[in-house]
Length: 81
Image (tube, rainbow, N blue to C red; front, side, top):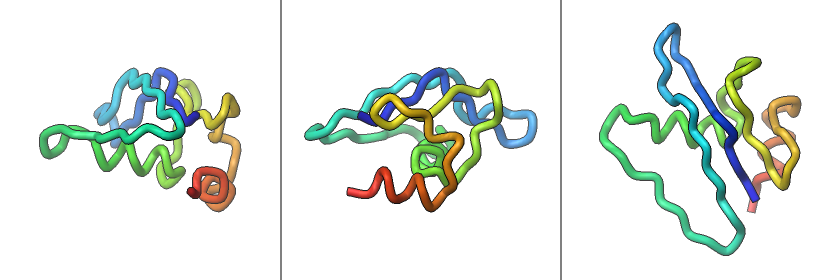
């Protein structure tokens, strides 16, 4: 299971995502929809490890383990399917 816990992502002082809690389970098809500028690409980039999560701005976990301490390459290996 891939999940976010109270995830906040900022660009400068502006919060693009704020307090996002999601769970993605195996075998499910999930769609992320929203208006232009709503943060869809930022969310997906953060889940993939392409954007850093600042300390205290929540976490992204895979099977209960936080991904924030891993390198981008290690995250990509873990979430590849």
